[in-house]
Image (cartoon, rainbow, N blue to C red; front, side, top):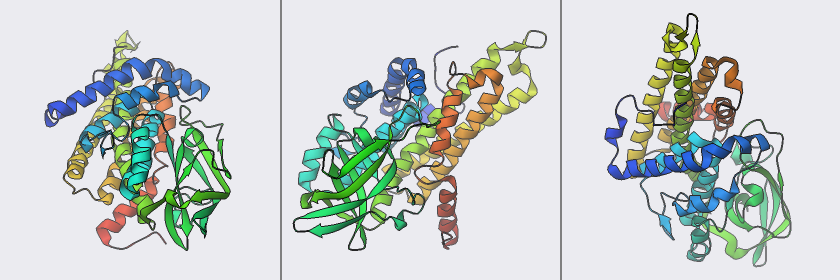
Length: 389
């Protein structure tokens, strides 16, 4: 099969600036050279390629759309294209970068003190420190308002108790952005690795996001100094604003996974011959599937680009990003399933990337707000009536 050359049915390239195309090409080449050759092995062994962290940092991928403290200060469209190409490699790779930037660096930049920013952001940007985001609890995923983690003041520090689970990068993180109730109000805390009472354990046996580190966090009488409170973070809107940043990247990343599956299926059906030595791409039912995929990918590309332009203009609403995440992840998962079908039995082997993407996308459809939660966000936006209760 031929190397990936992009998926662009409707000359969407003409809508990007030269700088945006350069960012995409740089990321695409990195994925081709450094990720594609090793990702199937890491998926089999359920390990994350930590040796790539320094290279990701040198390319400016951590907090790419943030400014100051060593960050690249890219546009949101440029950042989206990075996420697209990284997820074309693997959802776990995009998740790693998304957590580092959108869920760790962003809340420190937005809610932190100058001292916290100076201490953490340059290190997180250059990859000498890693972070994680602790919101989800064993009993509270789609309903974070029900969280049970609690902090109480004790002199010039806080005592934190509770559990978080399904935390990307949890066991390798040098700092965890942890959300807990303080005097009944949800607040954010920076919990450093090695703090007494803070323990992590990895979750094993995953069939999805195998090339990603997923952990549980435990806090038992964990003492956190007062200076580790994020002073600007108050209430549930604070962690949800972080999730909005991450969901935006997912909306682009899902397009990359869909591109990988579609391009593999398209090439395979052209090369694969059946029935009188004709390529299976000559069959109407096969062309129907490919036509559906490229149409949906094109629509998803245009939505991602438009939301990116809105975000750069300061006009993107969280409900826009919910539609982006909901539609594009659904599209990508359906594209993976249809692509797998076109490859027949070969589609379940890791000689091809489709089944890995399909399994990964089952998780992507669930995390950062499930498909149905985003449905309700959109429903509330268009009706003005909440349906969460």
